[in-house]
Image 1 (cartoon, helix red, strand yellow):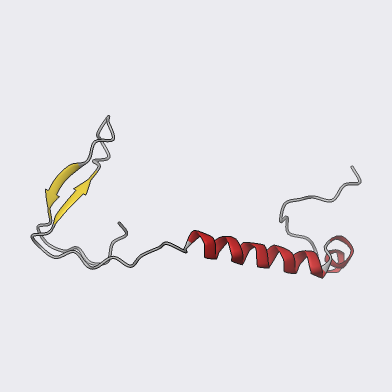
Image 2: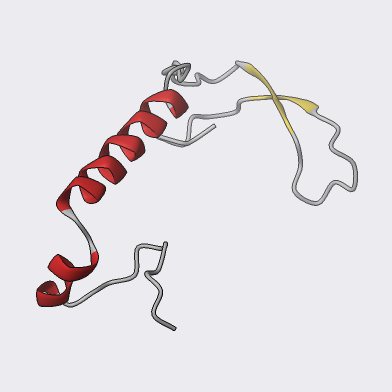
Length: 81
């Protein structure tokens, strides 16, 4: 259709010079890095959970998004929370 794609579709290296200018690729990378830094700006490192700590969680089988209080029985290693 004689149009350039706007997505990051893989292109053969010899055609890349014709389709994508290096300045455009650098702008994409700087924009991506800027978005990543904005996303991670307020991120915090949480302390490890110990047995006896109180936590709130939403059960997966719950029909409502109501949080339930629970007590940590034993640590299960590194988790995302």
